Structures are given as structure tokens and as C-alpha cells.
Length: 140
Figure 1 (cartoon, rainbow, N blue to C red):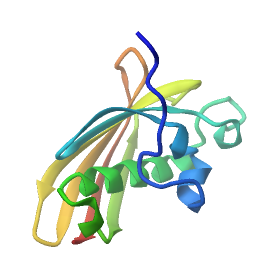
Figure 2: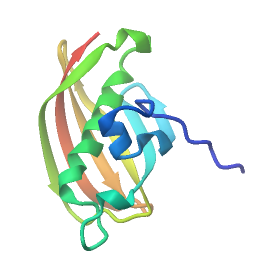
Figure 3: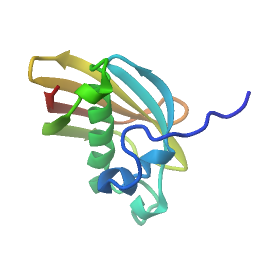
Figure 4: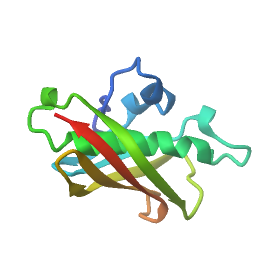
């Protein structure tokens, strides 16, 4: 089976957060209403001295997946104008190691003006590494 070609998941190159985590190279595994799963890689510039994802950059991955998950709620992607992160909580269970890992965004609640998204960082064996909950204000 041929490997799926990577395509931008949320932003084309040229956006600071997306470029930092090199999101244009992520592979989309699942994309449906309220659920996204991608295979991401760990760029060298995001490593700590132990060759793990530096914890301070974890929120960037969480934000990208949360926004993309919220975006799946809109049938017309052009109707999704923006979202703003209102709150984010991150729990660390194990180090995120490269070269690749999975990110999964799941909608927990879709309110009138906000949505609540859970983000899971998983190794390729399915072990949970990081769990985050994000509240986003949405505009459509």
C-alpha cells in the first residue's frame, strides 16, 4: 500500500505556530465531525536536552489540534472564521519521543459560542503520553 501523501492539516506554511511544529508535514489519519487523528513528527528544534519534546512546546501542538477539531464542526470550512483559546490544561504522563507520534483531538462539548476539546498524545503503540483539555471560543 502506498504511503499517504502529507498535506497541510490546518494552516499552509507561513503561520508561526504551524511552521514551528511543521504541521504541513503531518499525515491525516482520521478527519470527521468532532474527531481528528494525525501522525506528527518531532522536529529537532523542539527537543529538550534528553531528546524529548520540550514541555513548553506541548501547548502549540494542543492548540493546533484543538482548533482543527473545532473546525470539523463546520460543513463549510469557509464559514469557520476564527477561534480563540480560552483555557488549556495539560497533563503529562510520559515523555513524547520522536521520530513520530499520534495526536488525537476529540470534541467533548459543542456549545453555542465555545467548544471543549480533548487532545491525546500517543506513541505508535497507543500508549498515552499527554492529555489536554482545551476550551475554545468559536466564530462561524
